[in-house]
Amino acid sequence: KMSSLDLDARKQLTEHGLTLEEDQKCSVAFEIFDKDGSGYIDAVELRRVLEMMGQPQSEEAVYHMIGQASPSRDRTISLDDFKQVIGE
Image (cartoon, rainbow, N blue to C red; front, side, top):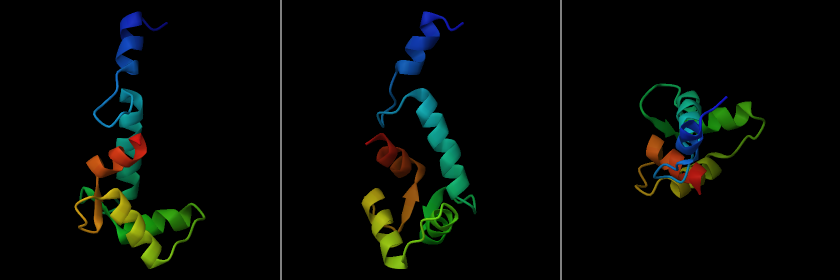
């Protein structure tokens, strides 16, 4: 049985508007996307995961997705960018 303190902690939102549990799940998902462990998701990694999910995308579409997620426009998605998109 969870104490009320545990429930309150789970309801707190991170800076991205995620619960602590959602934040942790985002970190795990990010690691799955970030195949080379660079700390960023690039177009090749994103495209590969989308294909594995049965949602193949053109190179142009993948770069568009990255551009939407990454305000720095450096053609990669950081963990912070990833969490921001998920929290929206």
